[in-house]
Image (cartoon, rainbow, N blue to C red; front, top):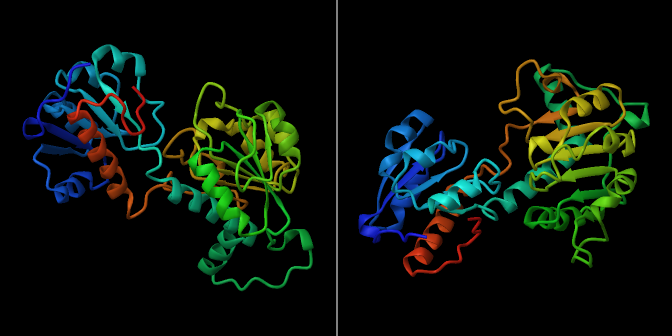
Length: 323
């Protein structure tokens, strides 16, 4: 593949609606020029200038044809399903993901959703807004719950899944991991193959999705998977919205076939105003913000700088290299 020009001749395009990536890069003392785009129209207007693009949600595969100088994309996200890898390879464009940049944040967010659902923090906030002091509850099944001794099934044992397991173990949860590779994993009580997913779901008090979106995981949690879960079970999704069959989930929640859900991702984002998920009291929706912390720009630019240095040295292996 063609190499990058010397850094002093390099132009990097930072394209994101909100993140302060160019500002973070400017603190690193690098000689490359850069520009910032806050919208797809701005990006299209300047794409031809870029040797490197740092972006995620603003990527469109049509940008390949608008970017004759482009040689490297540092994705801002861990997921890269939005990129046409074959087309990038054909055009001589390298791609690296931001895998690991948000592993701590996303695992903490998943744990926060688990705690919020079991301790009913979302309902307490609603009561606070209404200035309502909730009385004691006679129905034991309607009260807040404890985590100790319960079973957490984590679907996907990458960096985020393993870190979530480490956090969850502090709360004395029994942890079952679902992954294709056999063999033990530190901190996981049991490993099961995806072929045994439904059996694992039947034992779960909480199911956490931390897997990538692939042809195998799209729609993984559908009618059959939800039917395998206990009526008292909770579902937490910090993976991708399409891992869950959303109409099936809405039906299961409406019919009390599962107890609740914490969703950082949805099939369509932003979640449409007409979605029943907004108003379900047993659901917490966060706006795909699990990885969006004060440290995120620093973590992504660390990856960018490392990969620029690798490319400058003529190395073929990138950190989190995809193409």
